[in-house]
Length: 213
Image (cartoon, rainbow, N blue to C red; front, side):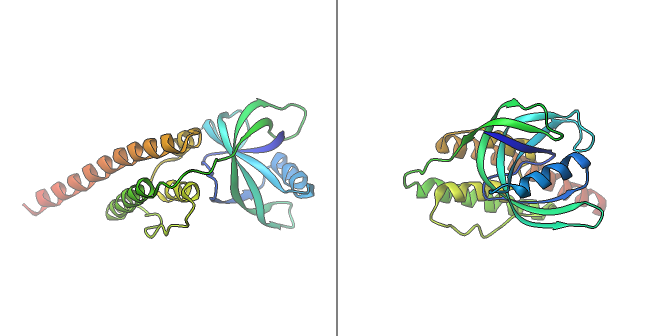
């Protein structure tokens, strides 16, 4: 399928929410076409190098289909959108002939997984712990509750979205197809973040102790 695509400096995950301020002419044209479709969707991919404005960026090969949930058009032609992430996709090739980025994509829907309460609960605990450390470091913490929904795939994406992982790490997880592999890689990335946060906290304590002395 051919999908209009926003290359952005962030990674949208399935189940996530994305606010957008659309002001460039090429993306205004995209929004007009998206809203005219029966299903108002577009793709979001991470910019690996370059800027969101002006073009010439290097784009990631994996993304998420976003569905328009709210839309406001301003008098000067700008748009304010809120979109929700749905299904993952892989970029097969970039399309020509349109005034905005578009790509031929292959959808990569998540398959249901068998009961895996232990794995999901362990990860839930790891995310809560790392989020608490992030708050201690003065960073904005994610959802500390992470209430289970009964859908392991949905819960995992929500945990990833609520964690302090950067957008490149999130993009890497977006590319991992198998649920078990994604859980394993997510746990490894959380351990890396935990180590950095603990080192930051330790350095801060050391600095305070030195100042007091």
